[in-house]
Image (cartoon, rainbow, N blue to C red; front, top):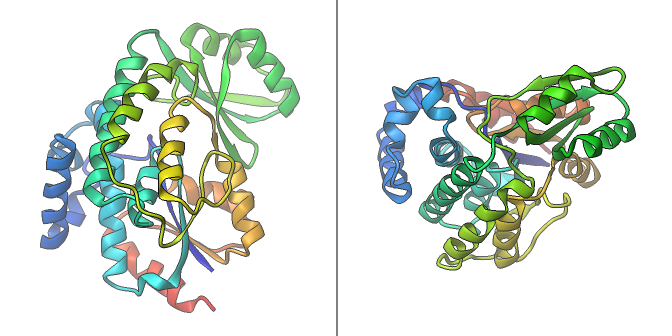
Length: 306
């Protein structure tokens, strides 16, 4: 049972789409997605610098477009029916919506572009950020977050929680972390998946009302609680609400384990989710697709599955 997963923001590196554009069909697809997003994804995926592609309004449609391109490349080499299901981490859920057929490729990119703009605007209202917390006691961490007015944003599993809030509070957490915990500041523009993003929720809800949603044709897990969603309209509602709600990737991986997942393939820009899976889904083989050269290993994993 092979599942495809799509990464969230922070996975992209300058020039990471360059090798994909050697394929004329993928180059044409990226052009279409650029028009849908009203963002020059070709330039941002090839020549833009790291600071530019960290901009939330750029990063989100760029990551989703990369995942969609990777999925097209993968499914041109292997029967799509060999994939048991799909899930995305944070913004990667828009990729999952496209891969599963809930949204068209262009609607997914258009909608996530509005998400990125709305979240960038919300992030500009207060100086906020995010930090990864590794290790430590879970209850002690939550108590410390409450003291500082911080919120858990991503429950990533494997002993990792990403927390978010005002920069001064994050600095205080780093100075006095819970026992045996390590705090690592992340290069993001705001406190995503927290109350600070509530203004973006309303904008995204308005934008989502104009897109058509179909029921998924692959098993589709949600970050909301790790459960399976069978109705496209409900998944879009969850996409909207998730902007200001925590990502429960830990629950998603628990659902993978319960479903008997035997292999995991991460779409570009890959690496983060296969890393988490190595700790939380021990013994489950995975492939991170970062360049077209990785497609062979992904196909081998799929074709080798029972």
